[in-house]
Length: 299
Ligand SMILES: Nc1nc2c(ncn2[C@@H]2O[C@H](COP(=O)(O)OP(=O)(O)OP(=O)(O)O)[C@@H](O)[C@H]2O)c(=O)[nH]1
Ligand SMILES: [Mg+2]
Image 1 (cartoon, rainbow, N blue to C red):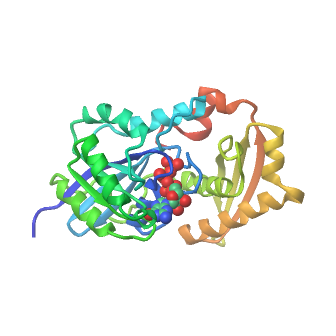
Image 2: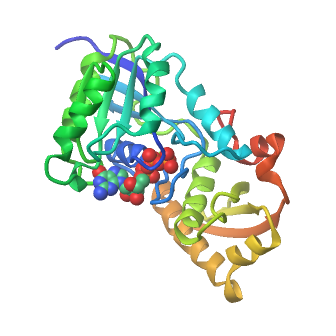
Image 3: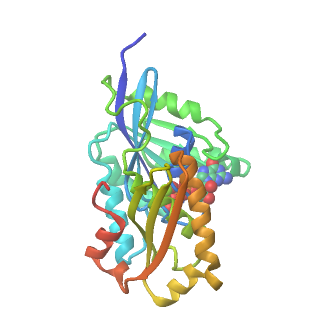
């Protein structure tokens, strides 16, 4: 048996390409939130995959985009901050047969990095005939990648091959985290993300983007029940109305779904109390953004 390998592996790519779905598939648990809407992930989040011969510390990152508003810009900075000290970078794209303009503009900057870069072509289950081959050829021509690997996070096609290749490129080293740790964020962060996912999946237009979630308290009662108090922060009274819904139906749905998921992940019974608060203009204010989203810190 060879010696143990470990390393830090970043997952980068345009928003919505499936980075968080890929990492959930790897760690075998839905610890990262995903949605069909862009800009679901806001923070860099380390999640850890440990097997007999290696430990891969993945860094999930917020998706890259060209939106100019303040919150989007801060989210983008967070993505690029995640790239420090990596042993390997996985750049993820979709199989649409051509290099996106965004990727083409980014590649000169990416090529300056000194760690190897893989191209991961995700969602091959959606590729039309020939498109996968065209995509691989187009990206190969646009930039030099250490490896190019097609796969599907959703269908778990070729996932093992991705992991095998990643491990090949890791340096030898001792594990960085205990073997049973899958996420290096607090329980509070995990809970706030699960609630935020409910908002992303159930509301539309600007509402999910202008919402943040803060867990105010987690108390364990003597009988083991976890009492969780969380606050949804929105940008306007009209958003508050949408989040609460007719006769409270929307917030009830969000709360029930989130509670069931928190219970299954934490293995405890949960009482979840959700409140909604308006902080006008928070998405335009750097200090409020940092405070409410944790961007810039490892919370
Ligand atoms: N058909 C198909 N859909 C996928 C696949 N991987 C991800 N998706 C879908 O793509 C959408 C975006 O997935 P996410 O994992 O949230 O994407 P992301 O890159 O993390 O997005 P951001 O956090 O916004 O940057 C979701 O609706 C996923 O279900 C795949 O292999 N096949
Ligand atoms: Mg994501």
